[in-house]
Length: 292
Image 1 (cartoon, rainbow, N blue to C red):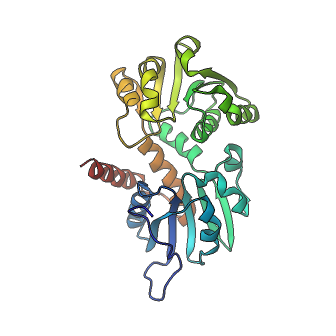
Image 2 (cartoon, rainbow, N blue to C red; image 1 turned 90 degrees about the horizontal axis):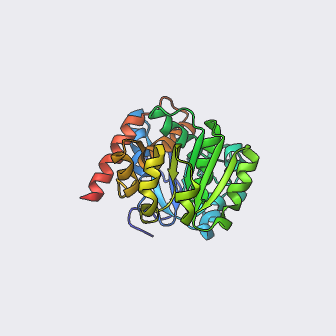
């Protein structure tokens, strides 16, 4: 169990001051900012709720879920659990089914409902920066986060999406999703980026590590009007720096994290409006503390 993660004492005890409980699960989990964001929301909303982080892998997930008592209202899920939890849910919403990933489990009436706030979180993070529609989009990477970005792009009226892949053969899930969404997807090998990508893009979304994106950062920054890097630590990434120097609109991983968490808070607690500004301030403070 990493530092910051709770042991598996996830049932209520007599005299517990918390009337409801939620948590984030994953492995590794110590780095997660979710407790900071959700706790900030609870404080602003005046809710006597508890939110923890638990180190849980695929093998232990079913046992953890079976051990939850009626005080629990929701779970946030990170890697490697977003796909593993699907068969353990009683119901999976359409957005989660579409991208094949559940990042939120809602608990009520003895039922588990799996949903996905990454897709609407991406959309809300872009809308906050004044981006409501896109047409030409580049995805850097072809993994699970790229699938969420593809679904978000389709919801924002994208007509053509390019995906930059080290191994184009790994883009099968992305091709399946694009066909279901009716989006023209074109997968480009990493080495062909300079010649095969269009000169202008409305949006580029990077879903790969900082070092992986660095060799193509300048080229992407010259092409894309808006650059969204889903990383948040360390920040800024080399791609974000290149985009800022090119005068582009830059959206970061903390923006995504805050908006997807705000949607989770709303769904788990039923409270609106969710204090997004307070959540972002808490996240920024935590990242500054990490950086020393």
